[in-house]
Length: 91
Image 1 (spheres, rainbow, N blue to C red):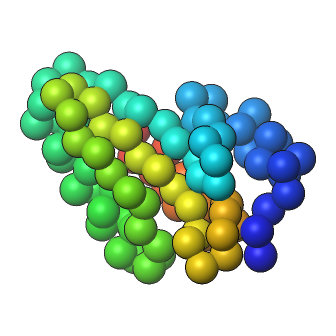
Image 2 (image 1 turned 90 degrees about the horizontal axis):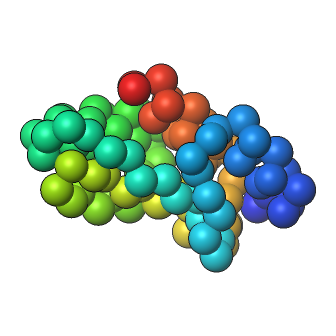
């Protein structure tokens, strides 16, 4: 079930750096070198596979931007929160 705006605001307090963009939660991570970001993206992909819930990823030079949403629910759900919790533990 899609989370309310208040629930999303509470999540954003718990996870600094994440922001709401339309019907998704987004964060850009910075790294000292390109390959550090690539390795992080691979670890995110492995966690996403375990959860069967996959973020959109944009790998740039020294940055990785993740966008989490539940497409079939039309917005942010608890599945996104679970994924964000695992992503944050990777750092």
